[in-house]
Structures are given as C-alpha cells and as structure tokens.
Length: 137
Image (tube, rainbow, N blue to C red; front, side, top):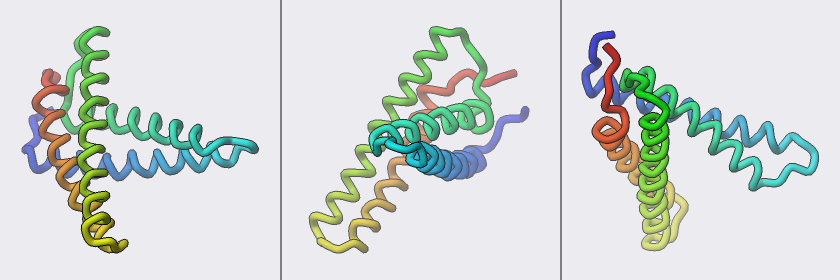
C-alpha cells in the first residue's frame, strides 16, 4: 500500500473516531438491555469496544503499521492507551473550564468541541510519532 498523505490519514483517523464512538454507545446500550446490568458495566464495555475498534482501525488502515512481535505490540497498546487517557483529560479540562468560566450549556459544549479538536489533533501526532512507527512493506 502506498503511503498516505498526512491529511488523508487524519481524515481516516477522524472517521474511525466517529465509528469507535458509535461502537462505544452501541455496546453501552446492549449491556443496559441486560436485566440488572449496572451503568458502570455498560461504560466499561463501551470503552473497551471503542478502544479495541479504534486501535485496530488506526493500526491497519490509518498508519499501515506492521506486526512486530508480542512484546512490541503490547507496548504499542499500552502507549496508545496512555495517550488516549492524556488527551481525554485535555478534552475534559476544556469542557469543564468553559462551563466554569461561562456557566452555560453552550459554553460547556463549545469547550468540549475545542477540547476534542485539540485532543484528536494531538493524539494523531503522538500515535504517528510514538505508537505506529513500523510501516508494512
């Protein structure tokens, strides 16, 4: 597969973020249909479904990353997860800061959009530089 331009890679990255979000929400809803299921379990299931789907789509289709052995693959998953947590904190910080500063729902959502944009942009760059560095040939 010929290398993709960074802009094309980023568009795929965002498309897959939307798909992972849908998988997250669908998994949450599926768990909540189980009688007696707890909210916490649905959130955990949704997070796991979204994470696994996004990781695989990014690895295979965005970054065209080669398999490099169990140890290196585990490292990739762990670093990818750490970056996910870090950029989620950026998103939450913007959302909470805008809500705290301006006190309106519009401000909260505006902060969320700004935080998501910064978070996804940063995560793409971090993943490209530190996680998915081994291109398939």
